[in-house]
Image (cartoon, rainbow, N blue to C red; front, side, top):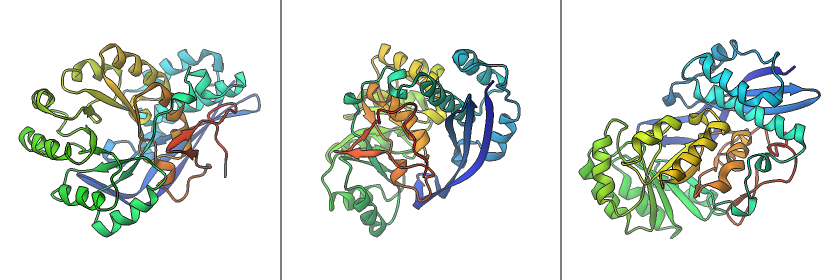
Length: 337
């Protein structure tokens, strides 16, 4: 019998975090625990408000969940059951999926990355994200980015070039850019991408709105940099629809409903010759370790949240030479503070 427990949590950010159309100082979280024969599997739902989920909606969803008649070995049936309760609730579903994988790995006595077939030696560098901000704050954030080899920069405002110039006055580290749908027209997007190509920028995420798929196909044909789908690609069924408009996808467990579907997304993207980034929302180490367990199977990694928050209830992962280290202990590798 699996016992299911949840509790709300507010994850406080080190600095206000701004993207092209939204700013916040904290992120609502739902923490999940699955208990089975003395073992506990941990999971989390991270729910930034612009994605439409709340602690109230998660509580509403969790109230419909009963795992008492399941055994952990029936995890595929559990994942299917959870997904069929109601449409949506992607982060809430991810929380249960993550906790289930943590629990199963603990029952087997192996690290979660081994359960998933990942090789820690193939872990990509992870980037450190700089949100839209004033130059003096960006300069402070760049000090926090010192242990990381790659910088991820949020753009999509009228300050885009000033932000990049500020960063370039401090560091020549390679940059990933996330425009968060903020560039409006395909012509402006192409103009920005061509300029960014001269600034040691390696990839561009989500330059246009989700509904501008035809414009994205036009842009893909002209862009000097690879274009990655973020908001345009949430779950497995999205990949086929956007494959002609992007060079790659950004998988986030809070969008994909968790690890089980993320694995299917990796396989599908590879079959369509798409590159893959493993990304995150503002998450505790729980969500980050879950994504990191899959990260050796992808091309790029943006799993920086533990270094951007004040009250992570778990110890942050070990970072060596810009890469997250996966501990060789059973489960996700979480250590409660």
